[in-house]
Image (tube, rainbow, N blue to C red; front, side):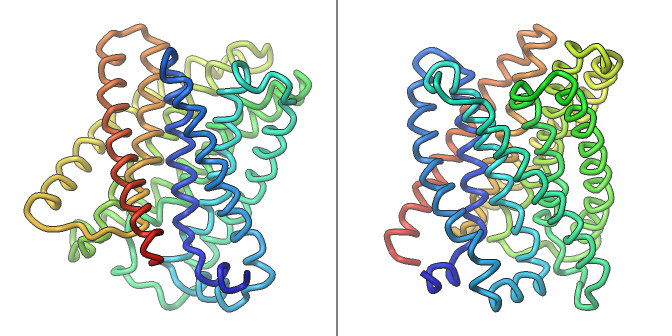
Length: 342
């Protein structure tokens, strides 16, 4: 068991994230897509079980592995992926609960969300502490993977509206308000960290080709940020004490979504060019293709529902197909990776 934990790749958390957001979107597509979402949910349950059974004991039985992660900026940023996966999993469970899990108490996914949120806040603080204190951080270490800790904070409010119904109305208001504050922490952290990363991409050499999927992580804070604001705004509209938040949230979400659309096009162009003229070797980092695009697709869906603009609905389906293509490609390559015992 210890040997399995020592070999555990933190990117499995990203697989849970990507499969979880695809489950949510597929269930929301309705009709014949819903049974497919149930299959995805089953796959993701197995992925999450494996990730948790390795990630949680790792802190207690694999001190050398933890030390190597903490001292390596390229590995440190992946620590939050498993608890982020828990938050996304809780949201996907709630999206299917009304149709398939009637007897499930909403308190279960709410506790999952709350526990994972506390862990994510602690890991975000730890990330900034290590980045400030470590003397070994160089500009060449920076990639868009550094945005995972800010994404962790932005995913908390994204999952909040799905679970607050498990609590009393007053406590639900507190949770939404706290989630909005955490959203602010995550978004400003994104701005600061993204500035350091883009400085490297503008003025220094690009990362090696196998790091190409990481550029999609730049879409993660924008997609999760816009989707989280839209979800919170919709929930706040029905809460007497938070009525003024709704319109402001919608306004900011549209601005963030706009930048996300440009980032989606940039990521698509960069990845296509690399795939055609060079080669992108497979790594577990391929899962970076999935969750960021999924979060942006979710934001597009929520915006289409809010505005009723048909063009946004068309764009949602284009993004949805793109996400499925990325997920199938990555799942297939990962399956080969596992079968070979790599």
